[in-house]
Amino acid sequence: MLLLAELSEEDALVCVQPDVIRQVLAIHRANPGEPLDELPQGAHCGTCNIDYERDYANNVELTFQPAYSVRPLEAGEYCLFGPGSTPHIKVQLTLAPGERRDITLRPEPGRYRVRTLEPGGETVFDWRGGPFPRVIADGDDVVAGEPSADGTIELENTSGRSLTFIVEENVWVRDALTAKRVTATQAFRDLFHDDVLRPGDDVEIDHITIMFTDLKGSTALYERIGDPKAYALVREHFAILGKAVRDHDGAIVKTIGDAIMAVYVNPADGLRSAMQIQEDIERYNRDSGRESMIIKLGLHCGRCISVTLNSRLDYYGSAANKAARLEGESTGGDVVMSPEFASDPEVTRLLAHIAVSEESAELKGFPEPIPFLRITAGTLAERRRQPR
Image 1 (cartoon, rainbow, N blue to C red):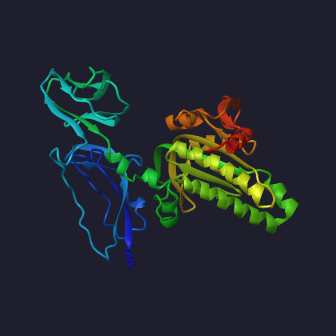
Image 2 (spheres, rainbow, N blue to C red):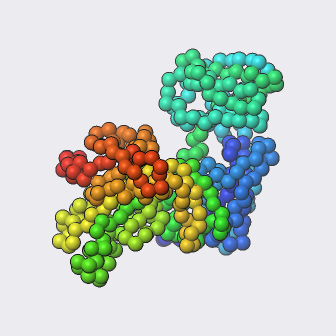
Image 3 (cartoon, rainbow, N blue to C red):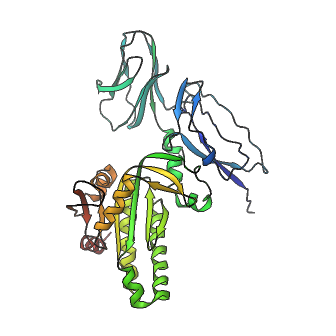
């Protein structure tokens, strides 16, 4: 028997220290179809005694629950305490003023956050193994310093009061469906297309990968084969691009004539998607027996803002502008990308065995020539002929 249950989705501001508390705001709305436009700009966590802003990448989380008509759920604060329920806490130790202590511990590589239980700063970093950084707190800030002795974590309290040091592995981030991630997912945009920001509101996105594409020679195509056939071809091209974007966890933000703008949370997904697009278009040209298509595309990643435009979530800023300009440098069948995009560690690994040319050009709106990298159409064709 197949059982179907109605679900409602809702966004919530989550305390930036969720191991202490998950403080949920702006839920139990009268209209669950418009959650984003009801989120506050920030909130205060009384338990942690901190203020925090609306940050799409870190503390705005999407959750799903049964619709109220099926089963009402209570919302509230839930404290987590004790080592059994907080395995991500590797160290929690109080040091006297001026005290220094060495803890024998060899944690697993991963993303870590060092902070104090008392209000103050924190540092988040990726640790890939080897000596763990020394943790130093002065009462106002907590920093990761020089490497500790191998197999230990060195703690030092340089303040004039007792401080409780906390070293935690940020494993919860992997399970959190943040607003940044979900709004860059095609399924969310298709199913919850009314989930937008308030008119005039905008949210800064700390890091997102943006891809622009264009169908080369489309104007001449309409003249050459006529409007009906050309339009059918453009629709085929949108289907091919849409599949490649979805296959690699991206989302199409909008179409602009015969071009698309797509976004990805993970830069490597953007590169894989771009290469799949060129491969699928080449296969279509070879097997369909119809007019050939050539796709130009450009990739860049960086900061931008998310806004509501034409009743949908859109992305604006210098990162989007640069991605669009890089697409203009594409000759078709190739992949053009910015150095910032190529420097992502996973992208670097993907490019390790692919010939990439370094070029530069004057781009509209940028005062200096902009460097970029290109995987030529010939290189991609040669790569497709290699056994996998």
